[in-house]
Image (cartoon, rainbow, N blue to C red; front, side, top):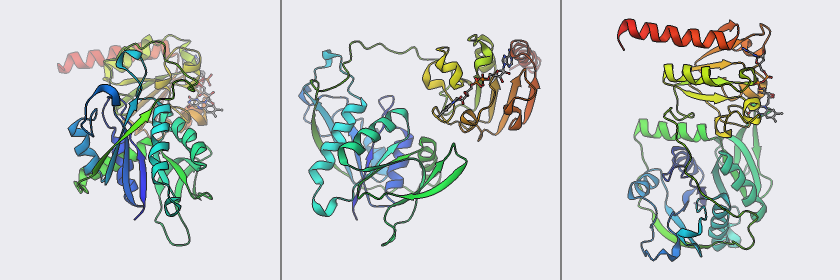
Length: 357
Ligand SMILES: Cc1cc2nc3c(=O)[nH]c(=O)nc-3n(C[C@H](O)[C@H](O)[C@H](O)COP(=O)(O)OP(=O)(O)OC[C@H]3O[C@@H](n4cnc5c(N)ncnc54)[C@H](O)[C@@H]3O)c2cc1C
């Protein structure tokens, strides 16, 4: 079996569920090889091959089927230098180095799987250029390999309106799988509890930082204010605001808090600077599928809908009765969000008070 490389995403210093799902998927095509960035620089003086990766993460990687774990540790960076170690550039360098070492004539048909997060997409583009590989994004399934078909995948196209089957015309391919698809694969593996449980080889890889050639220099690091609200990608309730909020998200936040949900935004609200980019839902933002999605002051463009149309129940609040969002809403309220949302918050508080929760 040939190796299928998987770029392991560690968003909060912990291997993501999507990355574990990618390893499971990689097992359909070959031997999964995980490439992980260590948080410990190589010159920090710790000799353990897996230094910088938690033992629980190593267990998770092996349960997901990794036959080999390449632990890339940056060289030439001191902790004081302020360098962001988990950067797209460093992962691109690490993956290029890992694959170049192995690239014998027989192994030229390399496949690399990456998660379709903003960072994963960036790495995929950079890596494909370095490897002269094809890059295929928005992948939702890997198809069985036959002798004449090569590696084929199913991907969404034209804002999720179609699913198409494509194949790389290059021998090497970087395949970007939608993170929600990869997370669902891992959730299913956990449900069935059928783990591959192999004992992986752990291989350290020293990865020199090309500080001089980098187009980006980190000048400062600041901890981001962490919200008390649930993570948008996992929230059961999402309350989203659009241009109709005119930048005032107070009632969006109040309703999200009343329902114990996360806040989100349309592209218009993000590009106006009212919300951070990680709140954007849609084609170029996150895709969410909560039990309840409230869209307030959002017209419901196709680009927004692809990010939320899998929600179980959609409630739309809009002043315009002809707004396209009403076409996919289960419940529609024609009205001013600044009147409707506070009334909803009040009613939730009243009901909670009555039933004593
Ligand atoms: C390639 C591409 C990718 C894109 N990706 C995304 C994406 O990921 N996510 C995304 O959201 N968009 C995306 N867009 C942009 C998208 O096409 C729309 O422009 C955007 O979604 C509009 O945002 P909106 O609904 O907030 O604003 P608008 O379309 O301006 O709608 C505002 C709505 O608010 C209503 N309103 C105004 N005041 C009130 C009030 N007081 N109370 C209630 N309702 C009110 C109006 O009636 C209107 O329907 C993308 C576009 C392109 C070309």
